Image (cartoon, rainbow, N blue to C red; front, side):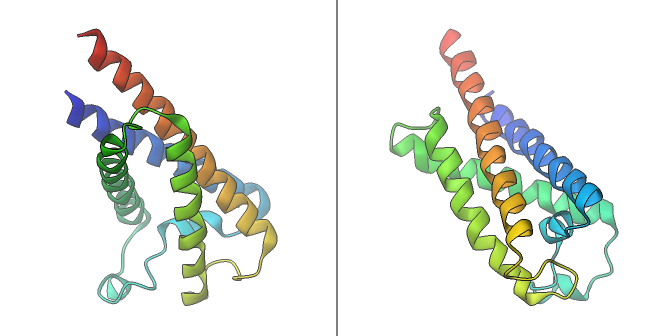
Length: 144
């Protein structure tokens, strides 16, 4: 039950982040969604001609793996169902990942303040969604 809940948390929160950044890109023309699904900096994957479905699926896999890893780390710290650790961790991860924009011509400029702001806000909100879903999972597990 717990693993399925964590799996769904990764998928749902990944869909949220993807939809949010897709909407920002559509409304502003800032390439933040393109950055989210970009694999230009990964040696083997950059050679593949992937469609948007495969690119987004890879994002969901990463999202799910990330949620599992953060859960395991935060469980050891007795914070698996707390809001702040997920928000801070995902904000930090978002900041680190933004640097990958330097490896592609298709993504925002490294020093594009607006893109960075939307990107970071999206990752902070992603952390909130992950945390809220994990809290719900924690309550469901404790009610059993």
